[in-house]
Length: 68
Picture 1 (spheres, rainbow, N blue to C red):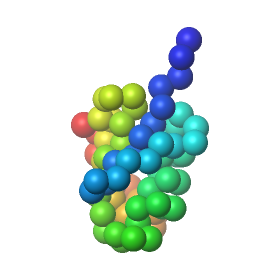
Picture 2 (spheres, one colour):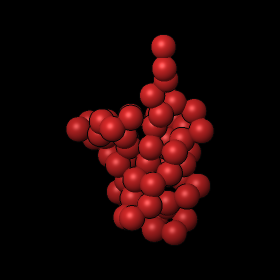
Picture 3 (cartoon, one colour):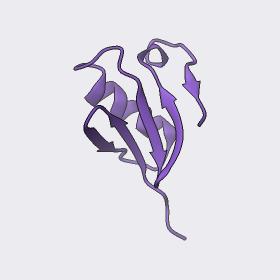
Picture 4 (cartoon, rainbow, N blue to C red):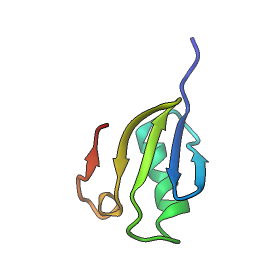
């Protein structure tokens, strides 16, 4: 059984999550994307499948995840 990787994409950048979890993808968005572009909406992919979008208010305790 192979694990799917989670990838965070924003603008022209693509970052892989360290672990195959949504929590790890959120951590990547917090560390890599939002310090540079605070209100950037990022797309989260599992393999090649878009599984949702996250906005920076999630990092502040909001619940702004939208399934694709």
